[in-house]
Image (cartoon, rainbow, N blue to C red):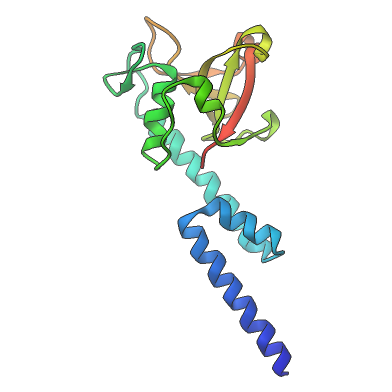
Length: 174
């Protein structure tokens, strides 16, 4: 019985450590839980929390619908594509550079079929294989929010047509 008590106490310690980690870094807590074989229940709850974080990112981005495109803009007075992404993610403690190519080098790569709200998607020349020229925030349902070009405003677009053809990659920052 004494051995079982020690094992149960160790499990409580590990769960407490995972819970503490989740407050500081939810991704680290999730990978720790998975690597140690800890509570699948905890992992699924943490996945839900991370998904809701992505939805918070989308809600924040929606606040800027209609803001005019301004080349180099990164404030609600005007955004360019990477400026919008930078501004929104800064609200969540993620400091991104104001340059699409640099943003694409950061975060965790995400397969297109695994996209979820809050992921950042990138577009490139030559069917997505060339120079990255545009970025937006995936909102779900094959749609994304972005600041498209001069003369336009921050808006939601479908990930179809030229956007689908020029899709290059995606990153997850939260």
